[in-house]
Amino acid sequence: MTGGKKTIDFDSALERTGGDKDFLYELIDMYMEDFIPKYDELKKAIKEENFTAIQETGHYLKGSAANLSLSFLKDASLQMELAGEDKDIKKAQQTLDELKKEFARLKTFISNMD
Image 1 (cartoon, helix red, strand yellow):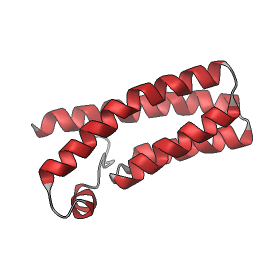
Image 2 (image 1 turned 60 degrees about the vertical axis):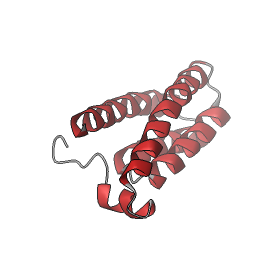
Image 3 (image 1 turned 135 degrees about the horizontal axis):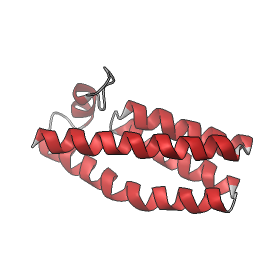
Protein backbone atom coordinates (compact mmCIF):
# COMPACT_ATOMS: atom_id res chain seq x y z
CA MET A 1 0.00 0.00 0.00
CA THR A 2 1.15 3.48 -0.75
CA GLY A 3 -0.35 6.79 0.17
CA GLY A 4 -2.98 5.07 2.30
CA LYS A 5 -4.65 3.54 -0.77
CA LYS A 6 -5.30 -0.18 -0.75
CA THR A 7 -4.04 -1.83 -3.94
CA ILE A 8 -6.19 -4.90 -3.42
CA ASP A 9 -8.93 -5.78 -0.96
CA PHE A 10 -7.23 -9.06 -0.19
CA ASP A 11 -9.96 -10.37 2.13
CA SER A 12 -12.66 -9.74 -0.45
CA ALA A 13 -10.59 -11.26 -3.25
CA LEU A 14 -9.80 -14.29 -1.11
CA GLU A 15 -13.48 -14.72 -0.33
CA ARG A 16 -14.20 -14.80 -4.07
CA THR A 17 -11.80 -17.75 -4.44
CA GLY A 18 -13.27 -19.68 -1.52
CA GLY A 19 -10.22 -18.93 0.61
CA ASP A 20 -7.81 -20.52 -1.89
CA LYS A 21 -4.73 -18.26 -1.84
CA ASP A 22 -2.92 -20.21 -4.56
CA PHE A 23 -5.89 -19.84 -6.89
CA LEU A 24 -6.11 -16.12 -6.08
CA TYR A 25 -2.41 -15.65 -6.90
CA GLU A 26 -2.94 -17.56 -10.14
CA LEU A 27 -5.86 -15.27 -11.07
CA ILE A 28 -3.81 -12.18 -10.25
CA ASP A 29 -0.96 -13.49 -12.43
CA MET A 30 -3.43 -14.05 -15.26
CA TYR A 31 -4.78 -10.51 -14.82
CA MET A 32 -1.27 -9.08 -14.93
CA GLU A 33 -0.42 -11.03 -18.10
CA ASP A 34 -3.69 -9.94 -19.71
CA PHE A 35 -3.27 -6.29 -18.70
CA ILE A 36 -0.20 -5.64 -20.89
CA PRO A 37 -1.83 -6.37 -24.28
CA LYS A 38 -5.02 -4.57 -23.19
CA TYR A 39 -2.94 -1.54 -22.19
CA ASP A 40 -1.27 -1.64 -25.62
CA GLU A 41 -4.72 -1.85 -27.25
CA LEU A 42 -5.73 1.26 -25.32
CA LYS A 43 -2.61 3.16 -26.42
CA LYS A 44 -3.37 2.30 -30.05
CA ALA A 45 -7.07 3.14 -29.69
CA ILE A 46 -6.23 6.52 -28.14
CA LYS A 47 -3.70 7.29 -30.87
CA GLU A 48 -6.33 6.44 -33.49
CA GLU A 49 -9.14 8.12 -31.49
CA ASN A 50 -11.10 4.85 -31.68
CA PHE A 51 -13.64 5.64 -28.96
CA THR A 52 -15.48 2.33 -29.30
CA ALA A 53 -12.26 0.41 -28.60
CA ILE A 54 -11.42 2.75 -25.71
CA GLN A 55 -14.84 2.17 -24.16
CA GLU A 56 -14.84 -1.61 -24.72
CA THR A 57 -11.29 -2.16 -23.45
CA GLY A 58 -11.97 0.04 -20.43
CA HIS A 59 -15.10 -2.00 -19.72
CA TYR A 60 -13.17 -5.28 -20.03
CA LEU A 61 -10.41 -4.11 -17.67
CA LYS A 62 -13.00 -2.78 -15.21
CA GLY A 63 -14.68 -6.16 -14.95
CA SER A 64 -11.41 -8.03 -14.55
CA ALA A 65 -10.20 -5.67 -11.84
CA ALA A 66 -13.55 -5.78 -10.03
CA ASN A 67 -13.49 -9.59 -9.94
CA LEU A 68 -10.14 -9.44 -8.13
CA SER A 69 -11.10 -6.58 -5.80
CA LEU A 70 -8.48 -4.30 -7.40
CA SER A 71 -10.49 -1.21 -6.59
CA PHE A 72 -8.16 1.50 -7.91
CA LEU A 73 -7.54 -0.34 -11.18
CA LYS A 74 -11.29 -0.86 -11.43
CA ASP A 75 -11.92 2.86 -10.87
CA ALA A 76 -9.30 3.89 -13.46
CA SER A 77 -10.75 1.38 -15.94
CA LEU A 78 -14.22 2.82 -15.37
CA GLN A 79 -12.85 6.28 -16.15
CA MET A 80 -11.37 4.89 -19.37
CA GLU A 81 -14.71 3.33 -20.29
CA LEU A 82 -16.43 6.67 -19.66
CA ALA A 83 -13.79 8.55 -21.68
CA GLY A 84 -14.61 6.33 -24.63
CA GLU A 85 -18.32 6.78 -24.10
CA ASP A 86 -17.92 10.56 -23.86
CA LYS A 87 -15.46 10.67 -26.80
CA ASP A 88 -13.03 12.55 -24.55
CA ILE A 89 -9.53 11.88 -25.88
CA LYS A 90 -7.83 14.09 -23.28
CA LYS A 91 -9.51 12.17 -20.44
CA ALA A 92 -8.51 8.89 -22.11
CA GLN A 93 -4.86 9.96 -22.28
CA GLN A 94 -4.86 11.05 -18.63
CA THR A 95 -6.55 7.83 -17.58
CA LEU A 96 -3.99 5.78 -19.49
CA ASP A 97 -1.30 7.31 -17.26
CA GLU A 98 -3.40 6.47 -14.19
CA LEU A 99 -3.82 2.86 -15.32
CA LYS A 100 -0.07 2.54 -15.83
CA LYS A 101 0.60 3.96 -12.36
CA GLU A 102 -1.94 1.68 -10.67
CA PHE A 103 -0.65 -1.38 -12.52
CA ALA A 104 2.89 -0.55 -11.37
CA ARG A 105 1.56 -0.33 -7.80
CA LEU A 106 -0.02 -3.75 -8.19
CA LYS A 107 3.24 -5.24 -9.50
CA THR A 108 5.13 -3.77 -6.55
CA PHE A 109 2.51 -5.00 -4.10
CA ILE A 110 2.64 -8.54 -5.54
CA SER A 111 6.45 -8.65 -5.60
CA ASN A 112 6.50 -7.63 -1.92
CA MET A 113 4.16 -10.49 -1.03
CA ASP A 114 6.67 -13.15 -2.07
